[in-house]
Amino acid sequence: MDKYRLLAIVEYDGTDFEGFQIQARKRTVQGELERALHQITGEKIRVIGAGRTDTGVHATGQGAHFDTAWTRPQKVLQRALNAVLPNDIAIRSLRQVPDDFSARYSAQSRTYRYTILNQPIRSPLAARYALIALEPLDANAMNAAARCLIGTRDVGAFGTPPRGENTVREIYRAHVTREDARVLIEIEANAFLYRMMRRIVGALLLVGTGALSVEEFQDVLAQKRRAGQSAPPHGLCLIAVKYDLATESH
Image 1: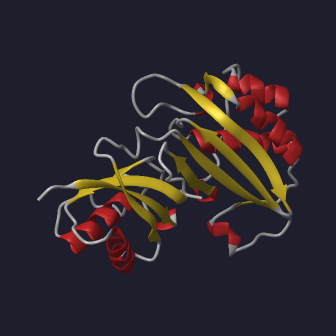
Image 2 (image 1 turned 180 degrees about the vertical axis):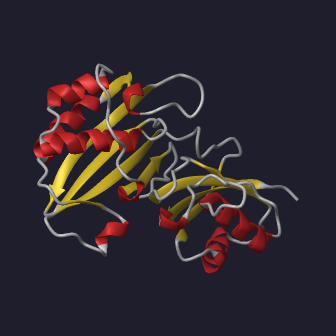
């Protein structure tokens, strides 16, 4: 029976996962997706994600493709998968794509958002999806620093490549906004280095507290000084992967 390729847009709460990519004897998003597909279709199916989110990182717009010989409507498959997947994963959309499409290599860009709750009292409910920052943050200074990232540049100061040695990435958008107590850091790029987003956030937090100036942030970007610590994973969310198809997550 002929197989064809489907693209799923996947949402998940990363708290209880050891990241997206499958690992032996560890709970992963890819592993749960493949288990659900086998349960529904009876096929052994390999799922390929657009991004290998780390342990504890969330997603509302992760792209993932797989090949199947499923003969019933795709809406039926989507409903069936959502019925058997655990509560911390959902298939937001499912559509057929060309056989040479790749959720990873066909992606034009990926957008990550990091959420900070900036208030003097902690919030136990928000703490699952946001970093709690009790000290006041200057979001305007953070935004000025973030804008230094825009363009095609070497961002090796903020991460390591998943393979090879190329640390040049093209960053299309980088901005920091404040919505009441929430400070949102959003970056769209053609691709990200390993831990890149979390290390950028760590440096921007120093800018927000005044421990690092915008000029010193630029020195970090130019690798004239160390970037500092990575921000914890629970505030990070992959919110969109853009393709040349009408498959954006929003």
